Length: 236
Image (tube, rainbow, N blue to C red):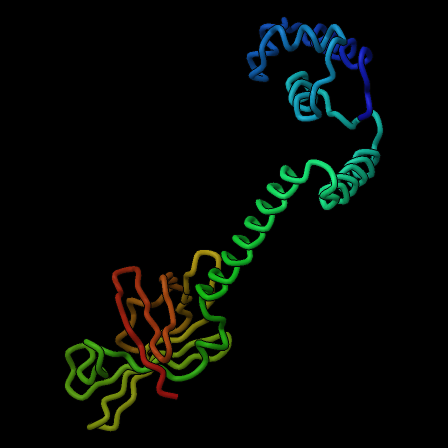
């Protein structure tokens, strides 16, 4: 909106009175002084665009509602002109150099933060695909569940998982449970939906879902949550 004084002041007065607000009530919401609002309404000063927006928002008036589509054109033009002028160091040199330096710092911080975030990003599903063996104290757990010579494996495909227990001396394999899984990169969690459980694993039936915090470091997969604190090693 391109309203100049005294039209701006008169419009603010009309809007304020239509809302039934006093000058004191408006300035309290806008964090302005009464004298400042009085001078604006009287057309004595032309406030900054930020102040205009603040007052209009308080009065329930959308700044650009009288000219749909005009706001973007004006904003873009003003922004473009400001940027061009910013690089003209013939005037206000020190002030412009300070602004440009601050912008460079902000951009550098954003890029640096993005790089750090990328490094911290939890692995994608492809990193999970393969066969994993459960560890205990950093070495393969060969007595899983208190059973002698028993090892637990987890086989991952791009969308599903299968957990099996193998008693290698007896040459016996137990299909523990299987289902689908999802990864939430925002919350850095891994969730399993158990769809089928073998005999002896009935506690995992009825569509039980487990959600865990996890990370992958080299060939190790750390899972923690729901009472579990496990480390798996990729073996294939």
